Amino acid sequence: MAGPTHRMLSGVLAPLALLLAGCATTAASRSPHDPLEPLNRGVYKFNDAIDRTVARPVAKAYHDHVPNPIRSGISNAIDNLAYPTTIVNDLLQAKWRAALNDVGRFLLNSTLGLGGLFDPASKEGLDKNDEDFGQTLGKWGVPSGPYLVLPFFGPSSLRDGPMIYPERYTDLRGYLGDWETKWTLIGVGALDTRSELLSVDQVLRNAYDPYLFTRDAYLQRREYQVRDGDVPEEKLEEPMDEPPPEDDSSEEIKPRRPTDATVEQSPPAEPETYQAPPN
Image (cartoon, rainbow, N blue to C red; front, side, top):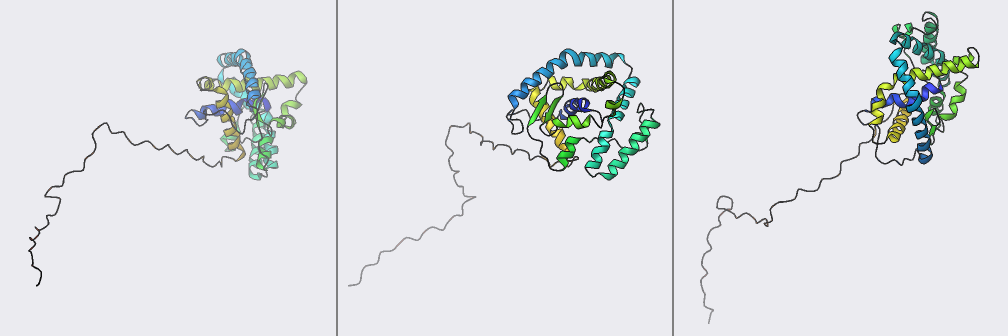
């Protein structure tokens, strides 16, 4: 769990690792969920250029030179600061048991976990949930609307995009220190997320159309999150009927000549006798 920037990045790249078997479709690009595709593709190219020239190189250097225990502690702390968003949305969705679990998780990690640097809550069986305001709207029937690609933030939708703003008030990073401290923490969170997703970069590059692959991965993941995993299985397309095999023989098929073994022999007919008419 993290803030808006963290969520947008993980909302795209994290599910790519789960789509290796081809869950995301790469067929026709025109989708009823993406009426703004030409505009979205332009923003996608812009974001991709920023990622290739800035975000990925910096994330790779961070991953290669910062020891794993330190990176793990930073990731835990960032997640813990943003975790009130999950608690608030548990309550808004009337998930009372999940709310109690997440309150306990947040308190335990904030105290015994030294501000979230460690994660003792998981060892105690307090599961980590992931809820946000977009999921809450979807829970109560608000459709996702058209797919959108936001500059810097990445994939979103007409429903989820504006929810970046209320999340600013449930993310504790917005209340720590001055303006520079807040944005430093946000930047560190985005950097940590990007470094964790370096392993799926090759998957995206090998996609037939990276834009379609990313779009379908995002939409499928959001549907899964809103429904809490209760997503009906998509009907598989029925295979096309195969044409009958062509006969290589040019000769006409002739009926098989009956044999004595297969045809019952009828008795010979008696010869007809001529009878003269009466006088």
